Image (cartoon, rainbow, N blue to C red):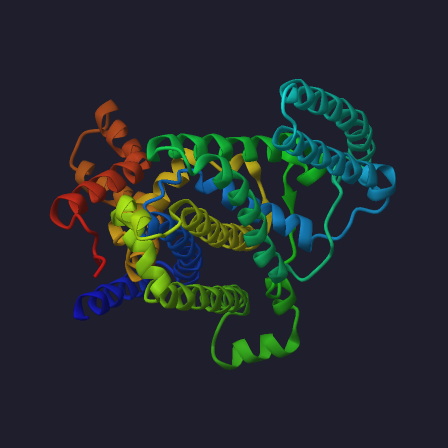
Length: 428
């Protein structure tokens, strides 16, 4: 038990040193995103560490969580539903009905079912596009410079976090029903492809969340800094303790985020630990270690894989909604599957696959390194090149600090795989 405690103490020391050497605002900013990263790593660890499912579509589920914030917390756009919102919903209902009818025709009909399914799909698609396109044109014509979308429900933003998990879970169910029967490498390709489809829809369907025009100024679960600075009570409190009201407002807001995010992390961690140590958790690890033996003992391997795939994706969706809330904006172009999916996987592998505490530690550590390596590398390279004469070589070396992030991630991953292949906190 001493090793995990020592590692978490060292991780806390890194944040304290960051606060002392730079600023507490910077340290809290990194820590807040570290909490979100830890939750995301826990979701991937449930899929890979519990069941051995290789999901590299992490950013697709995180993007669905971000979309949930827009659809849940933003105010509805006035006139959007009348202009085309109801037509869009009707078109989606028609499309779903056509898919259900096609599936039922395939299951119930005998000869000629292929032709029947083709007719249903083609007719349903034509009707869907006829209704859908007119609705989209009506919605996107409403004040397109700042709106042009259907808006949301105007609910408190924290309610978007479970909704993000729900959207990710629904998508995971659809993916799992079709892709979980594939071999692990094919599953990875399928999840990556579907993540790209999700992101392509978010970038191009402006009626949904303004596409690449982005949605900014999303509601926040904590006060705005400017509101605190204009509050006489807060200013008096800050000055009474010798704090600058502007700096104090930033720190108080970040502490508010940290309290909410830490509560979610603690809840997810508690449920994950209880599940892992239950008979269900032992069954999942037995399936992971030997599917054939587990199947021979009467366990429904495919159903259990689908179950854990949905649960892990829901956790990733919650983390994605929290990340969008922290940024106060939804920018679909910033979701880069290969880059950030790789980062989350490094968190799980370095922390310890199959161990929830290891995944959480990896989330904090790798995100801290991702943010701090570049300024640290800049300082190191500047010190190393200080004796050198000015020229192209010195300039080239100093410009290389921007590439230190990916280099450091690769080196850390190699070192951990060489000297601690089961991670910093291995599975017991």
